[in-house]
Image (cartoon, one colour):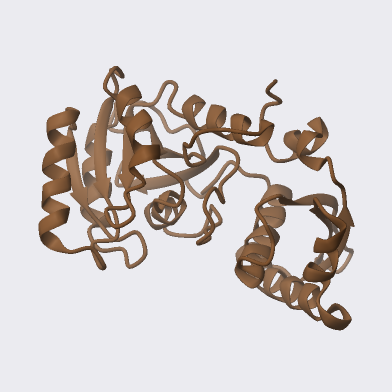
Length: 297
């Protein structure tokens, strides 16, 4: 058998560039990205091909000290993403480093038997000397099978890393069809694309405690797609922020999300958004399930 297939868990502190790197490895967008920490909430699978090798990339939420139920569910999802992995890829932002969040990850990795790969991201911005010192320090701490210097944003060094990852994968038949790039349903992807625009256009105005809930997802007779989504905010004072003056902000969010969805899905998309205030949404089991997270006590 010439085919190889394996699982690569992509872990790291929040905002290290995991989703951007997964998108680079897959060759197209499968995970949303944002400058906001903890953008990825649930485990998302990206599927990358290299020759006869299929790599199942588990893009996990950033690992951090959890305080709320949502935080605990996200951290659980991250560590569960490493279960049965053939390789664990630790990605570090050498500029921010986030040592307080990196240290518990390193401690946990020291005892893992899976082959580990270190990726130092943002080489397009980081200074060379501190970068090499960090690589040496990490290499002395944990036995990494490979260490790579990449820019997930520009793609520098990613093709070499992809080839090396493929070399670590075991022989086995492919788990997914050749043309499949993710395990996320279109319905969930559509909600994630809208959430990305919510973060991109509202920056620091809207806190992290917002969600996008899918309501309706149906094909019209003309082949176009009709999507209805609910933007949930935790406080009533956040509704006008999302709506904007005369509904201008929500219109801009909807237009950008619709344009991107049309490009990704290859069909005309009709997107309808409305905003709801729900103070306790982050304690709602149904919302967790919609986001692909386990309900944790």
